[in-house]
Image (cartoon, rainbow, N blue to C red):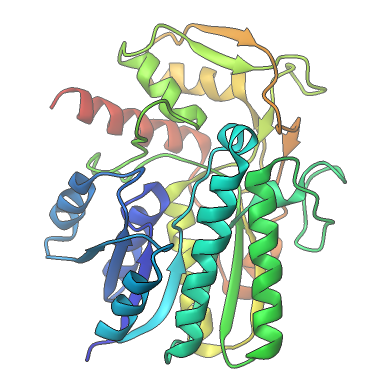
Amino acid sequence: MEKVVLVTGGLGFIGSHTVIALEEAGYKTLIFDNLSNSDINVLINLEKILKKKLQFSQGDIRDKDQVRKLFSANNITSIIHFAGLKSVGESVTDPLIYYDNNVYGTMNLIVETLNSNIKNFIFSSSATVYGNLTPPPFEENSPLGATNPYGRTKIVVEEILNDVFLANPKLNIAKLRYFNPLGAHPSGLIGENPSGIPNNLMPFINEVAIGKRSYLGIFGADYPTIDGTGIRDYIHVMDLAEGHLETLRYFERSSGSITLNLGTGQGYSVLQLVETYQKISGIQIPYTIVGRRKGDIAESLADPSKAQNLINWKAKRDLTQMCIDSWNWIRTQSTK
């Protein structure tokens, strides 16, 4: 049987772009997704981009029987685990569903990982684990203190993986803490396309740009930042996808448990992002300032030097490219 990389949540924003990076590098992927915040059309477009059929199985990581059958039917040697809920605001209002999806679901995967001959487990963590205990930029050894349930689910899973590695040191584990992904594949065929009301900033901007929404609501303009709006370390989704690829390659020559920031080290405010988007699209983005969102912090910024030194990865695409690809993606979708 052919060796397979299982990509949970592989039809989601980051997962789908990672599938492209893996397949183009010669890896065979198996996509597992419950389609709760993705669309089967993503699979169709992935196959257009890659010019090949892909393996896809619809299912939920919380379903033990489904997960067990998936593992028994395939020669999975590595797992890249994206599946989970990711809205900071929603996690504050409905925390239990976040612990159910993000913690319980991950535990099901880990159990089957340990029961199978799987070498590598790469976990999609988040910069939200850092909270606001220390000023940015955040290093991997910065204290953890998430300010919302979403971030706390990531900390809990990281701690579970630390314990699992101590008990099973032959399993390679990577915890990738990434910052704020933007952009889209340059083909314009896949991008960030959330179901319902977007949770992230760029889909809101895109929807204003195409007239789907009349204005952008900015959560707070009274932060201690350059213009009062929150500062984030935005990273192109293809850079992020390549970070997962380089992590997998690292485990082909090394072993152990690693924790890495995937970011650019450069921060931009919400208004700076809006201004850049307006320049490349030629479209004004009306906005209004609304109250701060619970669980948000003023500034989040990575120190990405460890990833560069350890796995030879560095973000290559700048904010302008992120906006160009995001605009290309939404313009392509709106003309269909």
